[in-house]
Every structure is written in structure tokens, then in C-alpha cells.
Length: 281
Image 1: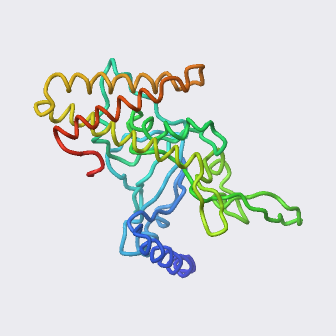
Image 2: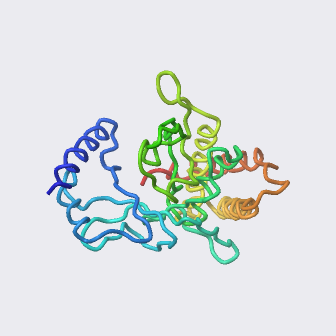
Image 3: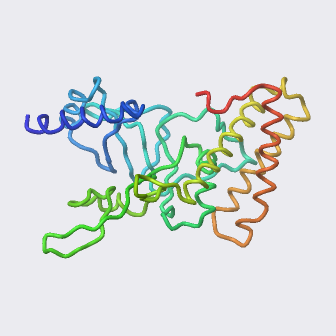
């Protein structure tokens, strides 16, 4: 009863705030880990979840999920976002081509090496890499979990962050490593950064390759043999490049402008034949 009295108004207030931003359906609670919680806990959150249960949970753990839809928890709730702490491997295109336009399920591509101080090119390639790992997106990104100063129980000033339950407690291994802030704290709110703009570019390229791959697979008759073959070559080439970039190497930055040009020119040809398909789901 005491837990309900605390959580119900808090969840309602958070839901109302998100609703004003058009994000009511994105509300989640977490983070579950390898272990979860007693069934009674999940049942309680289902009962008090704004708009009615089941409650939506996030999870980060050492096991991968192959679920093709949000999966249920014992006692109630369902996991809608599942981080595998070592990330997913990229598909070998010689074996098969991933259906990147039709990926379902709660799995995300969280790479433990992703940090705020990662090389700029990392942010540009994250979205597309997640597709080739057959996930629906990138795990554990923060827009504005900025570092703040707080005092410990002994009075010692230390650095903390909003993601890590500032100013008290800790999420331990769930707090580090991660990307805390894609935006910079400005005088009137978040400001864009180089990493945020590069992530935006990466998202645009991910959308473009989704459109190309979907049309190649679903509508080859509209594309014709020549354009279908071009799409297939482009798709395979981009997967191979991402496989090569798994490790830092001297060719890390080489040729990216030319690859982007080829991608967008091909996507434009596809759109002229079949219309725009990416992002419709």
C-alpha cells in the first residue's frame, strides 16, 4: 500500500508531462537486469500504470533476446526495450542479407564502447550499424543526463550524473559506460553538439538504406533488373564496410563522402520508381 501511494501520483505526473510532449506512449520504467523482481512488484505496476497496464519495462543484461515482440514478465508487465550489454554481431552478407525494413522486437544494439568522448565518426555510424545487427535501434543514449556536482554523506564534493540516480544511490554497472548527453547544457536549455548532428546524419543514412533494401526485396518488378542489382551491390557494400569498421583502422574515415553520395543517389532513383517507403512504420 505504501509503494502504491508513492508510485501512483509520480507515474501519473510523469505521464502527463510526456503527454504534453507527444511522448505518452513512450513511457517506460526500469532498469531491469539479469534478475528481475518478484511477481507482486510487476502486478502492482500493472495496476497503477497510467492508462492501464501492462506496464512497459526496460532491461539491460548479459543475455540477448530473439523476441519478435515485447515479451511478458512473470507477474505482469512486458519488456519493450532490451539491451544486450555486448551488442550484436553484424550479419555476414555472404550468408544472407538482413531484412532491415521489417525488424521487430525489443532488442537494441548497445555497445559498451560508446561514450560521450567516442570519436565523432562513431555517432554517425551507430544507427546503421544497429540495423545490420538486426535490432531496431541504439541502446542507452541520453540527451541531457549532464554531469553535476553533489556532496557525499561525509560532505565531500563529487561528480554525479542524472542517469545515475543523482544525487543519491547508484545504478552501478548500469551507469557506465554509456552516452550521457548528446546535447550541451545551454543557458536556455539543451544545445546541439557535433555528436548530435552526426547522429542525425547517421539516422538519415539509415532511413535511406532501409528504403533501398525494402524496395530491392519487395518491389524488384518496379525497379527493374538494373536498378535492383545496383541496390543489392550497394546494400552488400555498406554491410561489408560496417563489418570492417568494427575495429579502429587507418581506413576508418576513408571514402565516406563517396559512399554517402552513392547511397543518396540510389535512394533517389528508388523513390522515383516506387515512392518513399522508409519511416512509414
